[in-house]
Length: 499
Ligand code: SF4
Ligand code: SF4
Image 1 (spheres, helix red, strand yellow):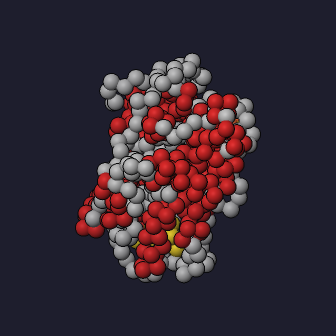
Image 2 (cartoon, rainbow, N blue to C red):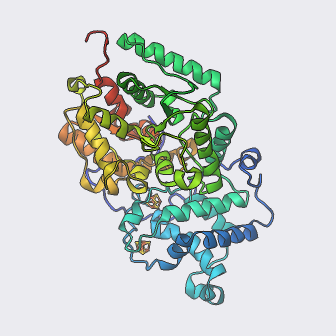
C-alpha cells in the first residue's frame, strides 16, 4: 500500500478533470550525480553556459531529426490531444496536456529558430530558455512516459514522446541528467544489467530457479548461463531474475524451451533486455546497450535471439536494432531475429510442439493490458496488428476465461501504466499513482462486472508499476501477472509430478 498519496477516486468512468494549474509543478525526479552523468559521456554537473549548450544541442537535434522540426512547426492547437494523457487525467495539471507539454519546448524553439519568434516574441508565444523555463522542462518532461497515446489522436501525428526525448537529451548535454535513468545505464555498461547483478550472483539466481522448478514439478528444467553453442540466446529484462510476478514469467520461458527440446542460454555479459537509452533520447547510449546483446550472441555462437517480456525494450529491438546494430547476418537466417517470446511460444502451441492443460488456469478470469511501447512503437509477427493479436491468442490457448477491458483503453488506444519512460522511481510515486488512474478505472470495471481477477501483461515496467500502485486504488497486487506465468502454470511437462 502506498501511504499518504493523494489517490484519485475511482468513479466508474474515465472523466476529464477540472484543471488545477501548477498541481504537479513540484514533481521532479532526483538529478543524476556527477559520476552517473560522466559514465554516459555527459557533463557531470550543470555547465556554466547551460543555456548556450542547450540551444546548440536543440539546433543539432533539429538538423538531425526532421520529425522534431515538423512536430515543432505543425501544431494547430486543435486540442484533440489535450485530454488523452493519463498524467493529465490523473493529476489535473494542464501542463500535462500533451499540447502544453510540447509548448514548453516550442516556445524556446520559436524564440531561437524562427524569425517571428525572435522579432515578436510576445505575439508569437516565444520565450528564452530561462532558469524558470528549465525548471518547468525538468519537471514536466519527466511527467511524460513517452507512451505516444496523444499522437494517435493528433491529426498531424505529432509525437510528444519524441519531443520529451529531445528535451531530456538536451538537458543531459547541459549536465542536467536524471538519476534513475543515468545510474541504471551506468550499471548496464559496467556489469551488464540494470540491477548491477554480477555473474556469480546471476549464476546463483539461475541455480535457485532450477531447484525451485524441480521441487515444484519434479522435472529438471535447466536455466543455463553462458552456454556456448546453444540454439537460443534469451535476453530478458533483469527484473525477470528476481521479483514477482516477473520471475514466474521467466520460469515459463524456461519450461517452454525445456518442453520444446530447444537449447538456450542467458548471457552474463548481456543480461539485460531493457534499454533506458531510449528514455533519455540518446541514440549513442541506446546503441552501446544494444551492442552488448549482439556481441554476446556472436560470442556464444547461438542461432537465434529470443527476447522476453519487456515493452520498451521490444520497441528498441523491433524498431531500432537493425539500424543501430544490424545486420544480424551471423545468426541462422531461418529465424526471425529477434523473435518475441510470445511469438515463439504461440508458434510451438499452434503446431502442437508443446501441450497445455487449460484447466490449470480455471481459477483465473484474465484480461490483458497492452503495453504502450509494444502497441504504438512496434509490431509482432507477420501481420498488421500482430502485437495485439499474438498475446491475446496466447492467453486464450492457456486460459479459458478471457475478458477485454473498455475498448477505449486497449490496443492502440491503451493507457500507459503510469511508470514508463524512465519514471519508475520512488520520488515520482505520486505521479505514478495518479497516472495509473485510467487503467485502474478500466480494470476495476471488469473486476466488478465480469469477475476478472488477473491482468496479464508483457512488460517489466508495467508489472513493477502496477504491483506498486494498484493497491492505492484498493486493487490487490496479486491481480498483476506475467503472460508467461499463465503459460508456466498451464504447460504440461513430461514427467511432471502428478501428471
Ligand atoms: S506521450 Fe504519453 S505521457 Fe507523453 S504527453 Fe503523450 S500521452 Fe502523455
Ligand atoms: S492534436 Fe496535434 S495539432 Fe492538435 S493540439 Fe495536439 S499536438 Fe497540436
